[in-house]
Length: 433
Image (cartoon, rainbow, N blue to C red; front, top):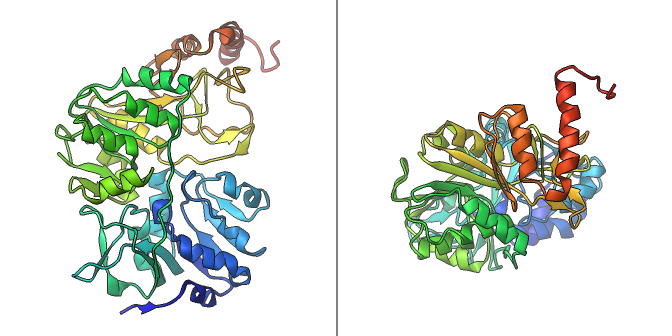
C-alpha cells in the first residue's frame, strides 16, 4: 500500500541528475508543484519532463532552481524567460510524435500525477485528464500522486490500482479553470463562417479558446454531430445538452464521445463527471492518425496565427519568437484528409494589430514555424469567408486566400504574389531583377 505523506515531504526525494515526469492539463498536481517551488534548492540539477497545456498549466518547473531544466512541447508565456535562458528544452513535435517520444523514453526517477480518491474496489480514476500517464507509468521508479477530493471519477476514465502508487498526498484544491470570456464581434463572425462548413452527422474535433467557442456556439441547430478529439469543453457539453451532438452516426466509437481531457470551467467538470458516454483516452488514441482516418465525415477545426499565399500555416511563432507549439493540429489535419469525406479547417482573423497587419501574408517571415505544411492544408477561414485549398494549384490558392484577406490588403497581396510567382517560375531572381 502507498505511504501517505505531506506535500512538504516530497522535496526530500529529489536528487541532482534525476528526471521527473509531471502530468499536465487539469491533471497537473499543483499541490506537489507548489511544494517543490517552495523548496527551490531541492530541484538542484533536476530535469523535468511535462506536456504543459497553454492557458491551463502555468508552472515553470525549470525556474525552481538555477540549475534545474525542463523538456517541454509548448513555449507558453510562463516558460519564455526560461526558454530564452536555455533552461527549457523545446521539442517541436506533433502530439503523435510526443506519444512516440514518451514510449521510447528511458525510465524516469519520479512520476508526479493527480488522481481521484480510491473507490470501494481500491481503484483510482485518472479523472478528467488522461494525458501521457498511461505511457509513462511503467517507466517510473517512484510514483507520487496527489489524491484530490475534488477530482471526480467519470465512468469513462481509466483507473489504476491504489496500491500501484508509492506515495500519496491528500488534497482538496479546486481544479484549474479556463473560462472562455466574452467573444469579440470578429470572432463571432468567424464562428458563423466556419459553422457553415459543418453538416448534420459530421464528427468534429475542436480546440479550446475564443474561436472554437464561437464555432461551437453556432452549431446548436445541427443534428447527430459526433466528437473525437483532445478535449471536451463547456461549449461541447452545451451541444450535447441541446441534442445537437450525440455521436450516433460515428463510424467508430458509435454513441461515444472520445476526448483526452475536460477543459473549461466547473460546469464541464461536473457535466463530464456523470456521463457514461464520455470516454477519456490517452493521446496515443485521440491523436492516432490511422484511428482518425477511420471516422467518416471527420472535421478537424483549429485556429492559427498566419497563412501564406501557398497555404503554409504558422501556429506557434511571432516575429520568429517561439510562443507555443505544434500540438495536435497536424495529426487531426492528416487524419481528416485520409477520412471518408473528411475536412480540416484552420480559422483566423484576417488582421492583427488593430487592422494594421494582414494575417494572410505573401510568405512566412524568416524564422517562422511551418506548423501545417501546404501539402496538408484544406480550408482556411477568416471573417471574410472560406477558401478551400485542397487540390488547388499555387495560383488558385493565392487567389482564394487573397479573397478572404482584409480588403485593404488585396492590392498589396496581389502585387506580392505576382513577384513571388515569377520567382517560382524562374522569370526573376530572388532580388527581384
